[in-house]
Image (cartoon, rainbow, N blue to C red; front, top):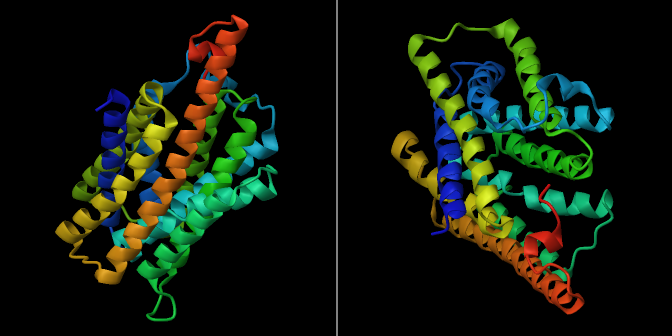
Length: 310
């Protein structure tokens, strides 16, 4: 197994364990209080990822301030919504709805970025939507606010990704790391005050563990993307569905029925096909570029042909 893929497996597994810890709080603490402490503890490992040559004090020197702040807001909304979903609906259902994010990203890429999407991509996204409907089955059972929260999380997460694609080439990475974290801490701190409950020592320890899992997962995912192609890393995220089923059953006695398992399988299959399509295109483009470089006498190192990694 390539080292980058191994890092990705561990990263997404650690993320899932952190999410399981969050789910365990249920209604004992407010969503904002959970979000505040998780963010604080997740920042400790994240402090080690500051890019060389950039200073934290440069975080507020922005090229696109409106978009950077909008991206930070959508990140806060996504974080709060998924926390609410974790503590109110089954684990696997939360992940299935959150994995609607590729559909929203594709729609936004067409409407905002003016990208073209081929029919096969639309077909796979539609298939993923059908899979989610099999898991959730609206109209056949009572849905909860947690289902809507998970779906809204997917929308805001897609908005965060779309905005990031626009601003990442021009903004400093310290800005993209520090400002979203600052937003999450400040907004959650303000909103948790009216209903603040002092965590017990056990709860405080679990918050520290959950936040550390999130921060460590972030570091491992960065390591994964540095050691493997995106087309190798991206499919690994679907391992979270497996973790959701296992952790949900073991700790929270949540057992999806047959239709839910079918829906989950459809969601994973459609997502993997989309990722593999992208990976195949990237490999073809890279090989074509290498061929052109050799014909023209340019450097044959593919990393030199494609340019530096952003």
